[in-house]
Amino acid sequence: MRLRKAGWGIAGIVALVALAGCSKLTQENYDKLKVGMSYSDVTQLLGKPSECSDALTVKNCNWVSGDSHVNVKFVGDSTVLFSGKGLGK
Image 1 (cartoon, rainbow, N blue to C red):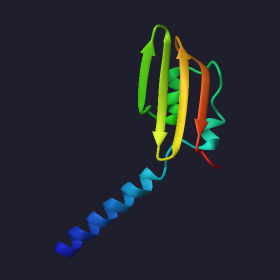
Image 2: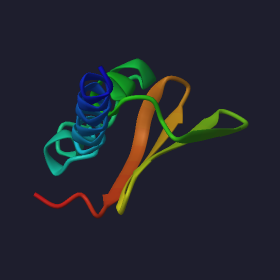
Image 3: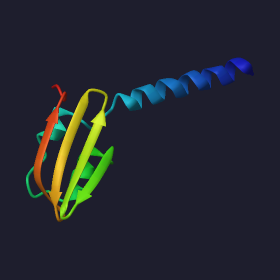
């Protein structure tokens, strides 16, 4: 019985590591970003942001995963500027 539980524990850890390696912060997804995209469209593409801040009508959101980083600025609900680094190919 203990071996069986240990097997599930190891399988769970392997699954979590595999999911962690499946970040949406890729060069391919970054290349899909376009000026004018809505916040909803961007979050469908990149997932939930790590953090967002609002100042007047500008919403500044950051997505971070390891060394990968994407920043998107929205005015209203539209992307106006974005940048990224560490995305690799």
